Image: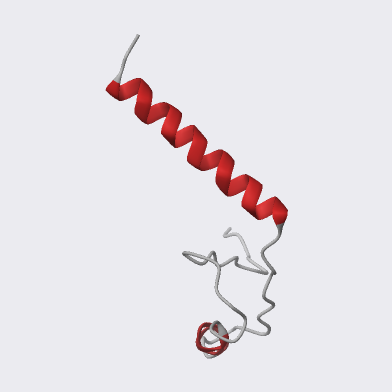
Length: 68
């Protein structure tokens, strides 16, 4: 028996202005089976999450370059 999906999440490579993202949204809407595309506004939570991930990568890189 196979799983059934009711939604997929698309993550963009960076934050886009709403008027600049119109082409991306329209392209996704053209895909067969897409019922609705709802953009999510970037907020402080997404900025904090990105900053934490960057810091984790920096910490790991420093450990590789300068081991104990």
